Image (tube, rainbow, N blue to C red):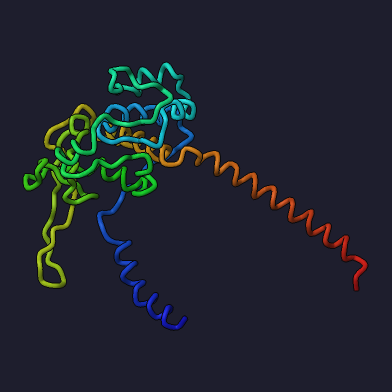
Length: 251
């Protein structure tokens, strides 16, 4: 036990440094009770993400049922893929993409990850920051880099909406005597279809949907949890009174 404690306290500073490093994340305005935001996010996901990234653990009709869309609306607004026979994907099917793993490796050098649980893996704040901090970088194959994910391989598929921006840095001398580039701000160099505020709302809706998709039962789970705690509270009172009644004659 003594050796384990020593190992833990030797490792703890390293873990703390790893957890505290990286680009500071912006707070994502998540509200899973806002169905209109979830609908906008679902449309954004279907239009801009689902062409490459699957959500193969979700079914279209499950999403429609949860966020208040009819099967007709789901078919018209979220489904754009067809099967090998050329027939349109059914609303009861999983959210898969036509891109094969072999093609993704040939085109992008790696398998394209699914996004069903990306919000649980990365966190909503990371996604919200990531989708808003692409910037021009001529040294990268795509011409873009990202503050939250340095040297990212994914192109900025939302650039037409956000526009093109460059990252401004200032140079400071570090304690080790080497120059360090400190991020200051982003500067739009080519406006997109949306202004900054509109794009932030668009990304917030998209991230909101991905958080829902990562755990569709989240609201129900929390609601059930509150009911269970209330039950346990009153049951504890009844159990205490019952215990007093059973033991009242015992001295």
